[in-house]
Image 1 (cartoon, one colour):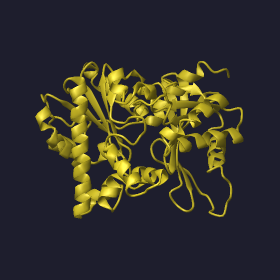
Image 2 (tube, rainbow, N blue to C red; image 1 turned 45 degrees about the horizontal axis):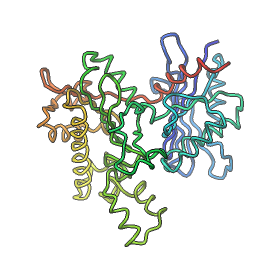
Image 3 (cartoon, rainbow, N blue to C red; image 1 turned 90 degrees about the horizontal axis):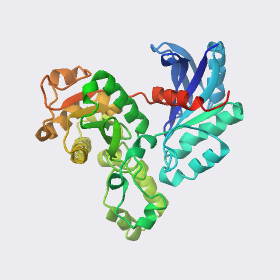
Length: 395
């Protein structure tokens, strides 16, 4: 009987999951799926690694069950993969604060400490933690493991992680943490496999999606990133503002008389591509639209991404490699091309034919800066962390 781990990657209104066999060569995907709660009748879909439909169920809107179909996920896996032993559930937890720099078993104490970090990630942290309690109620003896989006950035040096505010606030944990660490860690590992000669070079990974951030790496370690204390900072995102003048927030409170809760909702849910375009938070919809507002939102997204890639290059002292990942980075060739054009002064060149074909390497032979498109895989990264954590957890 071989062991498996279930990986849960919780988003704001959906949960991606994967079941991985703990093979000798590393975690191997058995199936993956989506718990989609966008619709009035939430849906569970499970597929094979090659995309074959294995299971689908819709939750009746009148059903008061609060388990979000997790019981159905576990029941399906027990029936379909009953010859395997479920060893653990691995969770993507957005914020680990200053204490957690690697995967950790989710005890009541750990859960409470993570729950206390909710003010630093109010949109994400509750969604990440909710499945922990749900699964605990269904299978209380099952090991659950937290894997943190902030952990990869624990290598940031003091200048990169400090805010220019009095030190007493830094002592209370107000510092730059960075996010998307599981994605950056996976992509950095893939880059090392594809082009090992670039590991020691000056690299920027651009995770561009509904949430978006950059990471500057050298020797595979994060030395700077665009998100800070919370996932609001940095690039323009689907519904989040990114970097903004703090005076705007003071103005909204002092002169528009907006309560803190309304300001928070504005910054997290009504800003970014959606706020600028007034149309959609989805880059695909904006690229397909001919409206002036959609074009303005795209231009702002590209400008901010280009500016902050240059900022990462300043931290690195130059740029040798640029990697695109995330939903927009992997699929929106127009955005890659536009960013490349703006960064031409940094010797970034994107080959049009390679870019149109979404090849792995989209720079030309002999170009000064190597440019790649590398799909991310946060679920596999979480499964690998679970393997590490299980070594210290008793069966």
